Image (tube, rainbow, N blue to C red; front, side, top):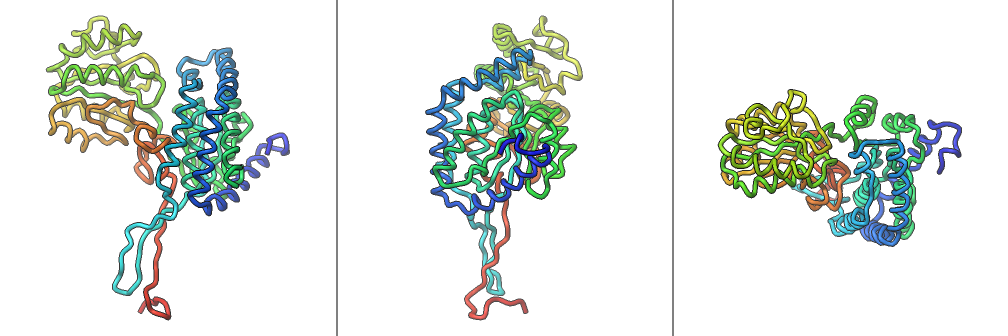
Length: 428
């Protein structure tokens, strides 16, 4: 359906919601073979249509540059042949994952003769609002389908050509499996009013997942009447402990910051124990300098790295999404944990250490959705975690936390099975 077919955005969005609710009932009944056939066809179509996707994306990227949108935004918007292959591989991984729908767990017998357990079931209709990442279209479609959900996708206007081209590949997969195309719908209007209708549609939408900048997520969290799975910032830390292996620490801290600057799991603040600061910071900051990363540091950092800019209080609270890094020298593991507790967005934080006790303390005491030992924060990602792909990162503490894959797109209901009595089970 097209927005032009309706008298208003409200009428269009109501029709989209109604169609999604009907499709959700149908896809919830679909068996694993049908869903996997759709996913396999989607992956093959993405690969076959790669040149079409890249051409549509090139038009979006050129329009973004004409508008002089910032480099981080353009980076998130851009598709490459490797990105298309990653989308296809993500769908293939989803095929290989167990189908969660209908799985029964925790079944136990009660003295009354009944058996009580839990069954995993779809959420229903998932609404996803995202900005410049066209790959979300394929990831979200695949995950929601395997979890038995219908999904309404509202990407940013700057990526509309890319999203529609990817959706065409998705729809080919759905048709091949005999499933309605309305299992995955793209909101085909850039009108911001559409987002307001989507996040308030309690009748048709069961959960909203926003992916984008802090402004978008704050707006949705404020306006939504539908439950929201979200994270606001990716203020991620790496702490280099006194017992860190210097070579390992430099390699991890380099990767956590420079592998890519735009993702939400990129390190924004580096914490270094004072005992190793003079050993690690000079060679590490030489690497940053060669890669064009601007270092901002506390007084103790600047004593070791004189050309670092002075870090302000605001720097510790900032998600740069750019080649800028805040560095603080700390006295202890306790001080590192205290800094993270104060400034972290509870997204992803890592420690580099050879001290098992320190590592275990960090894992237990740092209250983030992903906590790592001797690994780059860039691994905080559904694909890397073996989820096939992710619907987003959640810093919520209820329902889903961290990368949200298939299981996070389902819920559970209690089931009760009567015993062997011919008349059925009754309570006395």
